[in-house]
Length: 222
Image 1 (cartoon, one colour):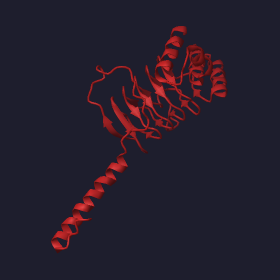
Image 2: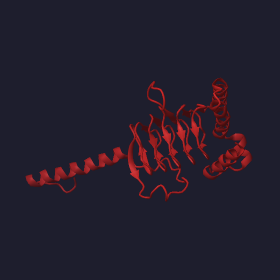
Image 3: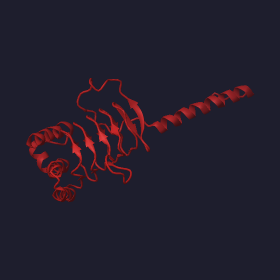
């Protein structure tokens, strides 16, 4: 547990430019505190001491504003930045080197038993306010844009934006070639709606030009 704590602190120092020291991270980062509480509650959960596990989880939610079910499986160096309003469900599985921002929900879509929450691969970035709902996988090295609602599987190395979420970019390199996730940009993402509107605008201009030329009074200023 202490080894994981050391790695978690190091990950925060690497990814958050506001973090100045180990002591500051240890005392002032609710995302780290939530992960610490989670690891304790998960220990009890694995030993079928469910009531104690849920009590610890509830205390962590009260203190940090982050709700992590003790049954979730969370890997190493997971960084929950700011964290307020983050909800992580019971059957969620999170890989290593994942970054999660405030307002994120990793949840289910119904009352079915068994696996009902998403599996998050390694090196994934889940931006502010994103919702990932359902028992599918978000592939390694992918990025979920701010406010996106993801309802189906995301392949590795993809960027997803919008409601519902759409894949708007896919890296060419393989997972094996990828290193730890370092791109934390949540803003400079493609906008598929704007791109589609621009395509439609160009098509309208082309059609207008064709009609005007046929009629013999095409205006070049159009």
